[in-house]
Amino acid sequence: MSALIATDLYMGYTSGKLRSEILRGLSLSVEAGRLTLIAGPSGCGKSTLLSILSGLQRPDAGSVIALGEDLFRGNRHARDRFRLQHTGFVFQGFNLFSALTALEQVMLPLGYMGVDDRSAEARGREALEEVGLNARMHLLPAELSGGEKQRVAIARALVKRPQLLFADEPTSALDAANGQIVIDTLHSIAHEHATTVLCVSHDPRLVSHADRVLEMEDGVILNDRHAAHAVAAQPQERAP
Ligand SMILES: Nc1ncnc2c1ncn2[C@@H]1O[C@H](COP(=O)(O)OP(=O)(O)O)[C@@H](O)[C@H]1O
Ligand SMILES: [Mg+2]
Image 1 (spheres, protein in one colour):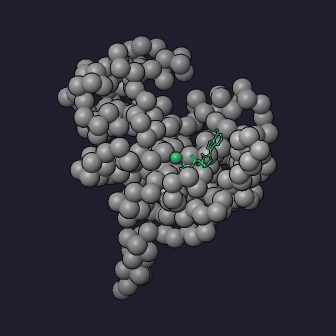
Image 2 (cartoon, helix red, strand yellow; image 1 turned 60 degrees about the horizontal axis):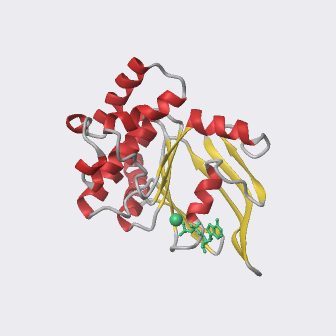
Protein backbone atom coordinates (compact mmCIF):
# COMPACT_ATOMS: atom_id res chain seq x y z
CA MET A 1 0.00 0.00 0.00
CA SER A 2 1.22 3.50 -0.78
CA ALA A 3 1.20 5.73 2.27
CA LEU A 4 2.12 8.76 0.25
CA ILE A 5 1.44 9.56 -3.40
CA ALA A 6 2.65 12.77 -4.98
CA THR A 7 1.61 13.61 -8.52
CA ASP A 8 3.08 16.24 -10.83
CA LEU A 9 4.45 18.56 -8.17
CA TYR A 10 5.68 21.94 -9.32
CA MET A 11 7.37 24.45 -7.05
CA GLY A 12 9.48 27.50 -7.75
CA TYR A 13 10.79 30.55 -5.96
CA THR A 14 11.09 34.10 -7.18
CA SER A 15 13.78 36.33 -5.77
CA GLY A 16 13.94 39.78 -7.34
CA LYS A 17 13.47 39.23 -11.06
CA LEU A 18 14.91 35.76 -10.98
CA ARG A 19 12.56 32.79 -11.01
CA SER A 20 13.91 29.32 -10.29
CA GLU A 21 11.87 26.18 -10.72
CA ILE A 22 12.82 23.67 -8.05
CA LEU A 23 10.28 20.88 -8.61
CA ARG A 24 9.33 20.29 -12.23
CA GLY A 25 6.54 17.78 -12.38
CA LEU A 26 7.86 15.45 -9.70
CA SER A 27 5.84 12.30 -8.94
CA LEU A 28 6.51 9.53 -6.47
CA SER A 29 4.80 6.99 -4.29
CA VAL A 30 6.10 5.70 -0.99
CA GLU A 31 5.17 2.34 0.54
CA ALA A 32 4.13 1.99 4.16
CA GLY A 33 6.46 0.37 6.67
CA ARG A 34 9.71 1.02 4.84
CA LEU A 35 12.65 3.36 5.12
CA THR A 36 12.68 5.30 1.87
CA LEU A 37 15.50 7.68 1.14
CA ILE A 38 15.47 10.60 -1.26
CA ALA A 39 19.02 11.44 -2.24
CA GLY A 40 20.23 14.36 -4.27
CA PRO A 41 22.82 17.14 -4.30
CA SER A 42 22.58 20.13 -2.01
CA GLY A 43 20.15 22.75 -3.33
CA CYS A 44 18.22 20.34 -5.56
CA GLY A 45 15.01 20.84 -3.58
CA LYS A 46 14.97 17.98 -1.05
CA SER A 47 13.84 20.11 1.90
CA THR A 48 11.25 21.84 -0.29
CA LEU A 49 9.89 18.45 -1.36
CA LEU A 50 9.74 17.15 2.22
CA SER A 51 7.89 20.23 3.44
CA ILE A 52 5.30 19.76 0.67
CA LEU A 53 4.92 16.01 1.28
CA SER A 54 4.40 16.64 4.99
CA GLY A 55 1.80 19.36 4.35
CA LEU A 56 3.89 22.24 5.69
CA GLN A 57 4.06 24.08 2.40
CA ARG A 58 1.66 24.22 -0.54
CA PRO A 59 3.11 23.45 -3.99
CA ASP A 60 2.47 25.72 -7.00
CA ALA A 61 0.74 22.74 -8.66
CA GLY A 62 0.25 19.03 -8.14
CA SER A 63 -1.31 16.87 -5.47
CA VAL A 64 -0.27 14.89 -2.43
CA ILE A 65 -2.38 12.02 -1.13
CA ALA A 66 -1.18 11.13 2.37
CA LEU A 67 -2.81 8.14 4.12
CA GLY A 68 -5.64 8.45 1.61
CA GLU A 69 -6.23 12.16 2.33
CA ASP A 70 -5.79 14.83 -0.35
CA LEU A 71 -3.58 17.22 1.64
CA PHE A 72 -3.98 20.40 -0.36
CA ARG A 73 -7.65 20.04 -1.17
CA GLY A 74 -8.64 20.90 2.39
CA ASN A 75 -7.77 24.13 4.19
CA ARG A 76 -4.74 25.01 6.24
CA HIS A 77 -6.50 24.04 9.46
CA ALA A 78 -7.21 20.51 8.19
CA ARG A 79 -3.55 20.18 7.18
CA ASP A 80 -2.32 21.34 10.58
CA ARG A 81 -4.55 18.76 12.23
CA PHE A 82 -3.35 16.04 9.87
CA ARG A 83 0.28 16.87 10.67
CA LEU A 84 -0.34 16.88 14.40
CA GLN A 85 -2.17 13.56 14.38
CA HIS A 86 -0.30 11.52 11.81
CA THR A 87 3.18 12.88 11.17
CA GLY A 88 6.48 13.29 12.96
CA PHE A 89 9.36 15.44 11.71
CA VAL A 90 13.08 15.16 12.48
CA PHE A 91 15.29 18.09 11.48
CA GLN A 92 18.98 18.36 10.70
CA GLY A 93 19.55 20.81 13.55
CA PHE A 94 17.61 18.83 16.23
CA ASN A 95 15.37 21.85 17.12
CA LEU A 96 15.32 21.16 20.87
CA PHE A 97 14.44 23.70 23.58
CA SER A 98 17.53 24.48 25.66
CA ALA A 99 15.63 24.75 28.96
CA LEU A 100 13.76 21.43 28.72
CA THR A 101 15.00 17.98 29.72
CA ALA A 102 14.91 15.14 27.20
CA LEU A 103 11.72 13.80 28.77
CA GLU A 104 10.03 17.22 28.73
CA GLN A 105 10.90 17.72 25.03
CA VAL A 106 9.39 14.37 24.17
CA MET A 107 6.21 14.97 26.22
CA LEU A 108 5.56 18.33 24.55
CA PRO A 109 3.73 17.19 21.39
CA LEU A 110 1.44 14.99 23.49
CA GLY A 111 0.47 18.08 25.49
CA TYR A 112 -0.56 19.79 22.22
CA MET A 113 -2.63 16.72 21.40
CA GLY A 114 -4.47 16.94 24.70
CA VAL A 115 -2.94 13.81 26.27
CA ASP A 116 -2.92 14.09 30.08
CA ASP A 117 0.41 14.51 31.90
CA ARG A 118 0.58 11.02 33.39
CA SER A 119 0.04 9.21 30.12
CA ALA A 120 2.31 11.70 28.36
CA GLU A 121 5.10 10.91 30.81
CA ALA A 122 4.65 7.16 30.45
CA ARG A 123 4.71 7.41 26.66
CA GLY A 124 7.65 9.82 26.78
CA ARG A 125 9.69 7.37 28.84
CA GLU A 126 8.79 4.56 26.48
CA ALA A 127 9.86 6.56 23.41
CA LEU A 128 13.18 7.50 25.04
CA GLU A 129 13.78 3.86 25.96
CA GLU A 130 13.19 2.90 22.39
CA VAL A 131 16.01 5.17 21.20
CA GLY A 132 18.26 3.94 24.02
CA LEU A 133 18.15 7.07 26.18
CA ASN A 134 16.41 5.77 29.30
CA ALA A 135 19.39 6.69 31.48
CA ARG A 136 19.59 10.24 30.11
CA MET A 137 15.99 11.42 30.13
CA HIS A 138 16.45 14.09 32.79
CA LEU A 139 19.33 15.82 31.06
CA LEU A 140 19.21 19.12 29.17
CA PRO A 141 20.35 19.41 25.53
CA ALA A 142 23.63 21.05 26.65
CA GLU A 143 24.43 17.86 28.60
CA LEU A 144 23.82 15.54 25.63
CA SER A 145 26.04 14.66 22.66
CA GLY A 146 24.94 15.49 19.12
CA GLY A 147 23.84 11.91 18.51
CA GLU A 148 21.88 11.83 21.76
CA LYS A 149 20.18 15.12 20.86
CA GLN A 150 19.11 13.69 17.53
CA ARG A 151 17.77 10.59 19.27
CA VAL A 152 15.72 12.86 21.58
CA ALA A 153 14.36 14.54 18.45
CA ILE A 154 13.48 11.12 17.01
CA ALA A 155 11.78 10.11 20.27
CA ARG A 156 9.80 13.37 20.15
CA ALA A 157 8.63 12.52 16.63
CA LEU A 158 7.96 8.90 17.59
CA VAL A 159 5.99 9.53 20.78
CA LYS A 160 2.90 10.49 18.78
CA ARG A 161 3.04 7.05 17.13
CA PRO A 162 2.80 8.74 13.74
CA GLN A 163 2.08 6.75 10.62
CA LEU A 164 4.41 9.01 8.68
CA LEU A 165 7.85 10.02 9.87
CA PHE A 166 9.82 12.61 7.89
CA ALA A 167 13.52 13.24 8.45
CA ASP A 168 15.49 16.02 6.77
CA GLU A 169 19.22 15.21 6.68
CA PRO A 170 19.07 13.67 10.16
CA THR A 171 22.70 12.54 10.20
CA SER A 172 24.48 15.47 8.57
CA ALA A 173 25.48 17.12 11.86
CA LEU A 174 26.72 13.84 13.37
CA ASP A 175 29.98 11.90 13.40
CA ALA A 176 30.13 8.40 11.90
CA ALA A 177 29.24 6.45 15.05
CA ASN A 178 26.31 8.67 16.01
CA GLY A 179 25.10 8.86 12.43
CA GLN A 180 25.02 5.06 12.36
CA ILE A 181 22.93 4.86 15.54
CA VAL A 182 20.43 7.34 14.11
CA ILE A 183 20.19 5.38 10.84
CA ASP A 184 19.65 2.10 12.70
CA THR A 185 16.99 3.75 14.86
CA LEU A 186 15.07 5.07 11.82
CA HIS A 187 15.33 1.68 10.14
CA SER A 188 13.97 -0.23 13.12
CA ILE A 189 11.13 2.30 13.59
CA ALA A 190 10.02 1.64 10.01
CA HIS A 191 10.14 -2.13 10.40
CA GLU A 192 8.92 -2.60 13.97
CA HIS A 193 6.08 -0.08 13.98
CA ALA A 194 5.17 -0.32 10.29
CA THR A 195 5.83 3.42 10.18
CA THR A 196 6.47 4.98 6.80
CA VAL A 197 9.83 6.69 7.16
CA LEU A 198 10.80 9.15 4.45
CA CYS A 199 14.22 10.61 4.80
CA VAL A 200 16.13 13.03 2.61
CA SER A 201 19.90 12.97 2.74
CA HIS A 202 23.03 12.74 0.70
CA ASP A 203 24.74 10.65 3.38
CA PRO A 204 26.07 7.49 1.65
CA ARG A 205 25.73 5.53 4.91
CA LEU A 206 21.98 6.11 4.79
CA VAL A 207 21.85 5.04 1.16
CA SER A 208 23.16 1.61 2.07
CA HIS A 209 20.61 1.16 4.89
CA ALA A 210 17.48 2.33 3.12
CA ASP A 211 14.94 -0.14 1.73
CA ARG A 212 14.59 2.03 -1.31
CA VAL A 213 16.49 4.97 -2.73
CA LEU A 214 14.99 7.64 -4.96
CA GLU A 215 17.42 9.96 -6.66
CA MET A 216 16.33 13.49 -7.27
CA GLU A 217 17.82 15.63 -10.01
CA ASP A 218 16.61 18.64 -12.01
CA GLY A 219 13.33 18.75 -10.12
CA VAL A 220 12.21 15.18 -10.79
CA ILE A 221 12.97 11.65 -9.55
CA LEU A 222 15.56 10.31 -11.98
CA ASN A 223 16.30 6.97 -10.47
CA ASP A 224 14.36 4.54 -8.28
CA ARG A 225 16.11 1.55 -6.86
CA HIS A 226 15.59 -0.92 -4.12
CA ALA A 227 18.61 -1.16 -1.91
CA ALA A 228 21.15 -3.91 -2.52
CA HIS A 229 20.30 -5.85 0.63
CA ALA A 230 16.59 -5.88 -0.25
CA VAL A 231 17.25 -6.99 -3.83
CA ALA A 232 19.80 -9.61 -2.77
CA ALA A 233 17.32 -11.12 -0.32
CA GLN A 234 14.82 -12.05 -3.03
CA PRO A 235 16.65 -14.76 -5.00
CA GLN A 236 17.71 -16.40 -1.73
CA GLU A 237 14.11 -16.66 -0.64
CA ARG A 238 13.19 -18.34 -3.88
CA ALA A 239 16.11 -20.79 -3.76
CA PRO A 240 15.14 -24.36 -2.77
N1 LIG B 1 11.66 30.02 0.93
C1 LIG B 1 12.51 30.09 -0.10
N2 LIG B 1 12.60 31.22 -0.84
C2 LIG B 1 13.42 31.30 -1.90
N3 LIG B 1 14.23 30.30 -2.31
C3 LIG B 1 14.20 29.16 -1.62
C4 LIG B 1 13.33 28.99 -0.48
N4 LIG B 1 13.52 27.73 0.01
C5 LIG B 1 14.43 27.15 -0.79
N5 LIG B 1 14.85 28.00 -1.77
C6 LIG B 1 15.81 27.70 -2.83
O1 LIG B 1 15.37 26.52 -3.48
C7 LIG B 1 16.46 25.67 -3.78
C8 LIG B 1 16.23 24.30 -3.17
O2 LIG B 1 16.30 24.43 -1.76
P1 LIG B 1 16.14 23.19 -0.78
O3 LIG B 1 14.80 22.61 -0.97
O4 LIG B 1 16.47 23.68 0.59
O5 LIG B 1 17.24 22.17 -1.32
P2 LIG B 1 18.03 20.99 -0.57
O6 LIG B 1 17.28 20.66 0.68
O7 LIG B 1 18.09 19.87 -1.55
O8 LIG B 1 19.40 21.50 -0.28
C9 LIG B 1 17.71 26.36 -3.30
O9 LIG B 1 18.30 27.02 -4.38
C10 LIG B 1 17.18 27.34 -2.28
O10 LIG B 1 18.00 28.48 -2.21
MG1 LIG C 1 17.81 20.69 2.67
